[in-house]
Length: 176
Image (tube, rainbow, N blue to C red; front, top):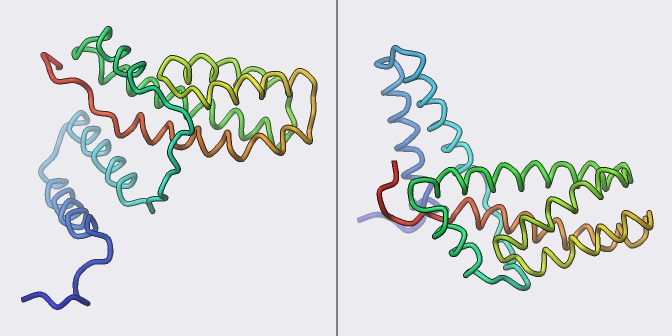
């Protein structure tokens, strides 16, 4: 019988440690650059899974039917690529907005807000879309005080949306 104090605090830590051992056991048996590249992808995913998990606040207003519709029209064959692109584009936009906010770079903020208006609206993050529209107006006015008030909740919702997209599984079908 396992003692309660011997159990891992995080229930996924044990399986993650097993996966780390499996990766290390597999490494000496891989020879081709393609095999090593695939192993690298597994190690990257393992690092993301091992990162401390913050409990993300839910999006204030989210319409999941929009993301579902996007995945439906994309089809199972391309859904994985769509989700990867969304994650990539949202993360790049997050970086652009963070830098723009720190430096009060109004051009970057306008640019990032345009992208975020489109992406957040497409996937149903309606509250984030509204904040992105506000950010665009703030960037045009070059209003530092309003920017300082808006960025924390916008950044929080954007981080939540990125987590949501990463956690979304493509529909089953003839996916490759």
